[in-house]
Length: 252
Length: 252
Image (tube, rainbow over all chains, first blue to last red):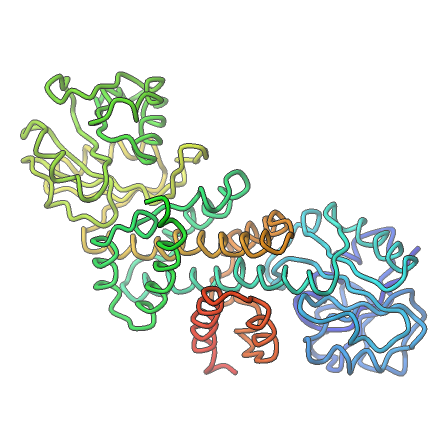
């Protein structure tokens, strides 16, 4: 049975601890973090500790801390045991051990929201064939969507994910906020938000586009701009409308 | 049995024709359009015509044409029969008949993508109690989510929908395109896109936000900007990152 230890107390560490503790072919040895307080809720998944001098024998350390802290945490761990990090943006080479890799789940995680891990793409990298095989054997127990990706390509995928998740979520926040400020119920948007995503399972986003910017419908665009009554929203509206117009202008 | 006629050949007209033709308590009398060619595929839902002189008796005309064409189409229809349009942005008052209303389904429609109408918010408006009641009786056969909204508030909801659908879809397009240009598979993003939407059914978008901009992680942000290698993407990245930073800066 493969033994896994996790370092970190954030959303990714929480979801990995949960899924690994539920997977009967895997043993979650320890969850470690500088602050024991922030991993108290992890106790239901396994043993927790803040003492890096009491590290138990394991087959792999999954370092799931902020990008800036990866190198420092890595330096505190035994050199001869495989270490992997879970970051989209950070090169595998920042790890300080002799055996290194990446175990990047391409998904957005919040502690309060359940995730179906089976669909989550897990992007792997390692510097030896042996550790690649080992990481693959673990990852495929968690997901049906496992692949090997270089650090350079992983960064590109992560950047695309910033657009498709971070920026998309922020636009949804702005839409919710605009309705709330106008005393309208933001939840009216939920079926639209769901369909906007679901549609892309069948139709590519170029063909899925609708709305006034695609048609370069200047009259509707101006009506919207006048009614935003918020300089920041106007600026975002103009930037994205211009980008949509440019995307479709050959076809108009 | 209430009789409905539809004018228009676009995505909304298509989905309304489909759902009305399937609803046994409703009779789809005619689908009309200037160009018969663009409604040939509507024939499976009911009678089609391009001859506005051959209008059959009906209880309501649903005008589902481009915003700019609503007034002109409306003027060609009998004055004494209820007319409604399906636009988010256009005032009810542009209609030229004596009895007018709005029947706005708040959803994104493509002919190629099936929509579960039961969840779609239908926003109604009319200038008489009698026609409000009539429109409500039709709408509730199609959806469980029917409400009355003034023209002013409907415009605001439509603007929010532009952010939550049109702009969101475009960001997904940019993310897909960025991966394709870098010879990476855009479909890797599909589970993330789905979860980004699904999460909001439980968590509000303020709390759902993750990523470098929320943490004001300047190092990751700069790494992303350097790797975009596209002026338009950089500009959109900066605009949205700045907006996220401002949203959370009090909390940093």
